[in-house]
Amino acid sequence: MGHDNTHKLAIFRGRLKFKSNVQKIWGVLIFLSIITIIEVGFGIWKPSILVDNYFIGMKLLNWVFIILTLVKAYYIAWDFMHLRDEKSSLRRAVVWTAVFLVAYLLFILLQEGTYIEGVKTNGFIKWNF
Image (tube, rainbow, N blue to C red; front, side):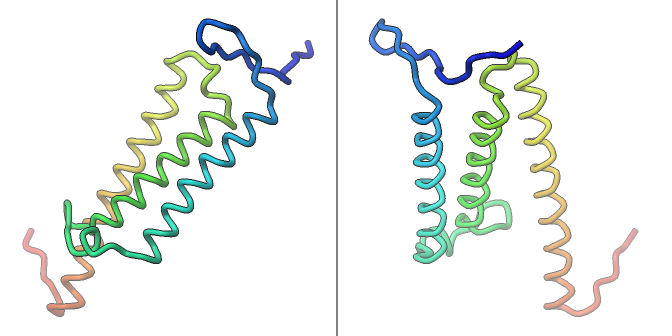
């Protein structure tokens, strides 16, 4: 039952080549490092165009962080959970469930955050039901 997972098949210009696990690991490290460096750079630099502009009640910089974090999470699942080798229906089930839950969490956080900000700035807010 043992499988030889030391090489992955890749196609370059019509020729078949094998990609070793060491090459895959270095590729993953470089890709995730680049995205992390971009996130840290934006966190330190904080470009005014991303800080001063808002989209759906949140700064554009926060949206950039959320999107880059989702890209990293998807790539980690794609590579380390071996989703690339699974059927497309399983990949969709895993990815769309996570996308739905993250979108729902963002909606809840934005709604509650807006309410709490209103309470802090305006004092007590009575809800009319």
